Length: 144
Image (cartoon, rainbow, N blue to C red):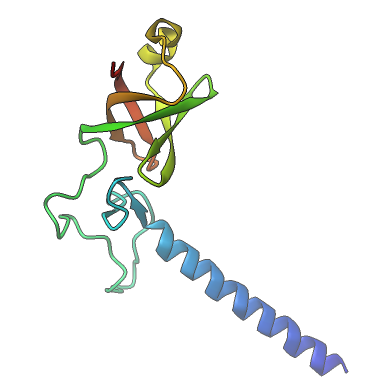
């Protein structure tokens, strides 16, 4: 009976280890373009520990395979339907079939009320992806 419990505990630990490794591998990648859900960028190098025993295969590439793939801190442009403010730091938009959250740069947070955005109204914006993989809007304007 004790042996059975010990084996069960070992199996649970092994299963949790596999889940953790899978989560870690998936965390290296993120969708960066709501219009094109197939576009994926890897997180920038240095955003997680690198293997120290010479392991290869799970390393993050320094240069993206696709030169059109956005990288962290690159200025990007977008067009979406404004859905509303999540909190003082973020808004939610609809891009195609995707609902995305964008953080607001401090200068936009301060003047947000002056933008007079209407829910379900179209907006154009400029943003970048920060070191945490978050989309940060630096410019935003209402489309008439």
